[in-house]
Amino acid sequence: MNPSIYGLTKADLEAWLLDHQEKKFRATQVWEWLYEKRVQSFGEMTNLAKSLIEKLEANFVINPLKQIVVQEAKDGTVKYLFELPDKMMIETVLMRQEYGMSVCVTTQVGCNIGCTFCASGLLRKQRDLTAGEITAQIMLVQRYFDEKGQGERVSHVVVMGIGEPFDNYDNVMQFIHIINDAKGLAIGARHITVSTSGLARKIRQFADNGLQVNLAISLHAPNNEVRSSMMRINKSYPIEELMDAVAFYLEKTNRRITFEYIMLHEVNDRPEHAHQLAELLQDKKKLAYVNLIPYNPVSEHDQYSRSDKADVLKFYDILKKRGINCVIRKEHGTDIDAACGQLRSKQLKKAKSKRNAS
Image 1 (cartoon, rainbow, N blue to C red):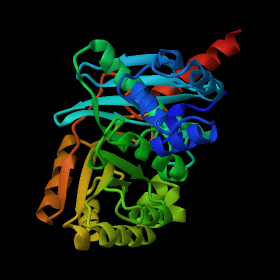
Image 2 (cartoon, one colour):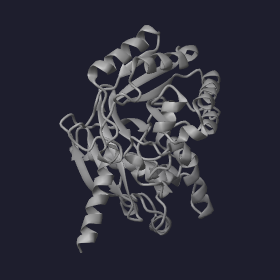
Image 3 (tube, rainbow, N blue to C red):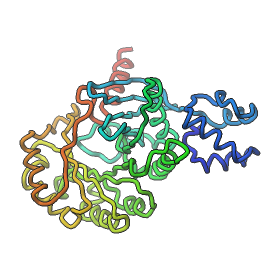
Image 4 (cartoon, helix red, strand yellow):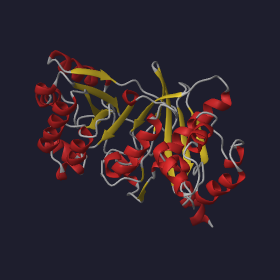
């Protein structure tokens, strides 16, 4: 199948047009049709010559995704299951926040990081998503708004869905440049957050790219023993190496880092863990922000359960008293398949059951 035109930056599109004996300014016209008028076919681009439309149709598709399931929660959170051209499936989540409409995108089919509490890793990585497939997730959520006719728009993006974004670094950076373009979706760099489980080399590379994009670290434990039991990646990039990369990032960018911390009952939620975390972040506390996350149970990982509310509050109080900025994350979509990867996992089980029955 042809690649999605959503995977091209405007500069890429200009270069492609010149290579195909077309005028450079046509890129502006195509861009407007894609990102302002948000058409779903090249034939709708009525100010383009038929010959150019035929070239575009011969080389690209617009939307490479097919909507399979949509779940809408009582709080307005919407979870989408999309099918890719190769029949593999991914999830995308829309979250209604006080500050705007935030979309969480997936960057890989499956995940190789091996977090023992996460539904995303139940299927090992099959492949990376292209920049066009990542961008298409935003475009389909925006289409959801357009169809409602209320003038709402995607204003924030978090790259925290299925997969490790820094394991698909080039496509993720391409995607960011596309959605950040002022003539396109115009999603501000400071409204984009990329999350990593701790690929130290890529954190350093990310620090050097000059973008004002936010960085989040999936930390989830304050020491190597606990973190290695939860996250296989810690054996490749232990906390000491991760924190060296974090220090490099902070020195290079002077930008705040969010540390994601899922609260697991009697695993990483004890007072001693809170003190260890405060100690770990002590010299970085001016630019460190800890996000304490309620756990969404995953049936395949029944060794874990959600921390008691009293333990979460105690953990929070210790961090605050130690001078660490932190918040307890507000939950979204608790009445649907809330955990990342759950909806896809459920759909795959249904498909497998049907095959076995037949």
